[in-house]
Length: 620
Image (cartoon, rainbow, N blue to C red):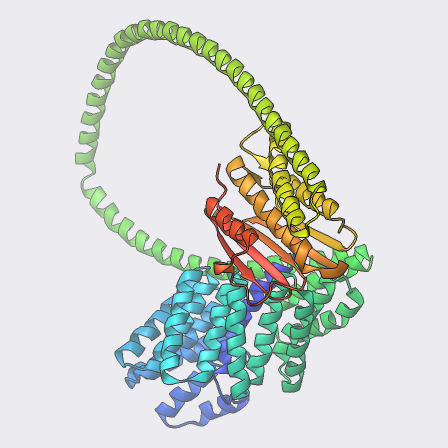
């Protein structure tokens, strides 16, 4: 679904903003605070009310909160209340972050941190680091965001602030999820969930349930997605938090559309859309239009699907235009100011020019005369040089033509040699493949004379390993490019061969998600042997007594140009007493050795069966 990644980023951002809101233990009604502000007499109390109003993230619009925060800054400066001034800066940072102005947001957070460090307010320092981390998260500086969140977490651990610790674990989990480190993200969310349950923070529990659902959504584990998103919505309804209900309803609609159940998705789409419009949340309202489009597409009403898709596009453009208009207005003011300054400078320069006009005119005439004489001299010189240059060019052209003729002859010779070498290489790979087939056949024949089951299994394993190498040479023989073996075709052939040789094709369903990646022979053979070991072990041990099951194999190219190979089955799993790092199993030992050959790392998980993740380099 093309809305998944977009909403995943949107939800993470909303979660970050909610983290700030949760720290306000008992938020007051907007109207009450405004009435108090009008009737208050003490300046210090006025500062406190202004800061509370600036912190009403969901009740007030960002521009209104900015106005209150700026008033708080002025009063705090007047009465030298540094802590209140830092708190107001933090609120300004959040408001500008909400408006998408990351530069201003970061500036205010850094000002707040500087004040908190000067007055040695540990809680304020932790808050500022967390806010700076959030600003870095929004602009994609995930490494810096992780460092800032960790600094804030260390301070919270020193003070024993359980609520603060749980919120920072969620934020760190969000960074891990965004950088696709899903196991680490799950670990952080589960630690935070434990603390939230301990302190009975039900809103925080619901948020973590939604985060867990998002991670499982990214992993494709849809049963867990439904469980956690239903839990989150149940708590949100009990708390009556319309903002959270809108998000959770959107999440459930997204789930049911993903699993092709549009009739179940529709009520949640409707509820989320109405709440988003009431809350004036344009981003969520826009994303719900996308869900409407997908709903009508799945129900066959393509006319309505197209209409909602157009509405989605128009609202996206509108939101972009609003931000653009604000930027243009800001640039216009800057332009007018600079224009007036330039006009003043131009006027002063004009006065000076009038006074020296005659002197300049004489000087210009003298310069023109000198330039004319110089041009004439250059013309005569260039004319002579041109004749000499033409002669040199003719000689050089003849030399170059001779060189080009020699290079073409050399190129033809190289091309001929290359074709002969390619033919020879193809013949070599063909003979290697045939020789391996002969060895494989000899082992098969010898295996017919063996009655011992253990020895027979060893023969079969050996045959499978040879077959995986045979397939590489077969692909090389068929390919015109020996440095690039299409690994997707290779995996399909290995899987087909192993399922055929073990007669397990009817019981085992195969799910292959292999990107179009080509390997050199240095990478293809070790990868093929690794897959052979994993596949063979899974067929032998993961599904005993003809048990049905599923095997998933995925291969993708990571951002750092490394490759990630994941092999997963939903069988009985590797016994817990087997230590992968200290195993005596030849198969597991081979996997480790082969992974080292391709400069990779291997990790194993026993959750819901067995999973091996191998990250390696594509050696050419």
